[in-house]
Image (cartoon, rainbow, N blue to C red; front, side, top):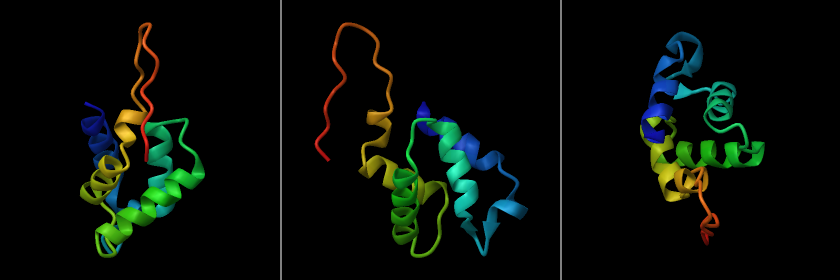
Length: 92
């Protein structure tokens, strides 16, 4: 579900200002990530962008961002678990 929300956020950005030569601009990416997860730090945002850039061979798009977020267990870390259980600890 969170994956679909992220895809929708990325696709709703106007492409004429968000992309330069097919690469998602970092300032726009940072704004999108803050919309998606307000608690994300700037260091995490930079790391995700850099790894998506490397994974996409110079192209940052939804596919490369999704790949990096899955590899870093980002969606599991941002889940809001309700109940008596403690949040899971993930060794990265």
